Image 1 (tube, rainbow, N blue to C red):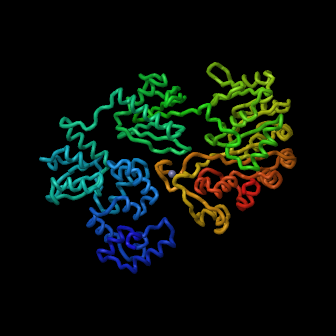
Image 2 (image 1 turned 60 degrees about the horizontal axis):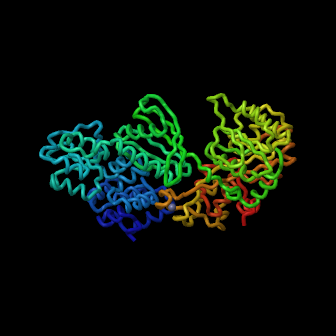
Length: 618
Ligand SMILES: [Zn+2]
């Protein structure tokens, strides 16, 4: 029973500061208040205990407490994140749990130290301001301090004030006891500051960190890029800070901390990358970019490099470009059955007209565009493209990569493209009135035009087009469809488990608490396979607007976006982005959380069973 109440409450019970009856009552109250309120806070609110008692009991029992449990019980860290950190620790037992929590950025270092000093009443020692008194160091072996992560700061009334990186570490505390007996006061300071001070004091005696030389830099860069490819990252961020070099990966659209390196690695790592992408190594004061090819496990990968000068050195971002074999078969892009049928029949199989894919950057438009192109590509059809730049190479079609450096502009290319007798024209992106006009006129002369756009959803795509100095009747007679899309992260299948959505989430959708009961919603707890995020891979959600005569008439009448949306939903069978996402939530592919994170809430969704009926999901 006591374990359910948590360690701190158990201690309070043991010390007789709290009765069991009160503890259980508070537990019932807390369960009604929801997960945001911790049991400790509830006990305080009920005036069963006060702040001082909690601090005293914590400090008296320091050695038996675990830091992670303390952070969870006091509401600084979620249980899921703690579990993830503990999981990571299993593979890296040499790391302290606090270190993992900070490295994975479950908490910032400052919050972490703050939490400890507030909750435990330990003195926070800001070593960037406070000086270390050399008398505190008399006869103290620096090496011993380094291996036990503490720093004697000064003597106060006969006791030595010691800054610990982790006051919960039994070995560190015992290490201090060996030198000072019980004659010291515990303080907390940032681990890297302790290390830095010790290094300074001990310089000349020992050098704990070997300098990063050229060979280690080659190894570091290889492992950073190789690991990113193995993990399916799209971008690598290498960021220099005053005290460290941070490396993060963008996986499934989210930045995930990979590793920290000592700050002195930054220059060599930057130099190595600049060699690889043929940038100017001597230039360290200006932004640069370049490209490189990286060989990994028998495949070669193209990487685009951007070097950006910051106050602490060069921040480098590497974009791992898509490989040819990554074009997804059209049937597998994530369209639900009825929408897929409709798209094939009314869009891909019609000989002419404009098809527009819309969404923000990183929403997967390009992938969908290429899937469509490879779906309609066949020996009887001539397909020609104008792209800025060509991202995937597709066999059997003619692709032109725009290059403004040699004056090969969009405008120039589009002017020539129609004279090439194509059946299908792919215009990478409609970015101005001119490219919009070319698309519409090519469709008018019997071509099929595939292109992309940059708008929130299908209706705003239509509105935007209507505002591009193109006659309304040209739009209504050429545009076949507008397909809006987003990418949502998929639940990790290794750690998924059922969960019940909160009533506040359902309320946001306008749903009652019973409306989702029929469906088994899933959520990932986080495991090593998914980097402890609970998600792995992504799925597209779509909103397909196929223009019918009602919509066309509304365009000719220049109706408002509200009207257009209403007419589309009522007459074309349009399912909104939000609705398609909810259907995928109901089948356990993604979560409500992810849906709210990525999708605009423009109009209240219909009941799930109705959405699933429209999409042909059983
Ligand atoms: Zn997982």
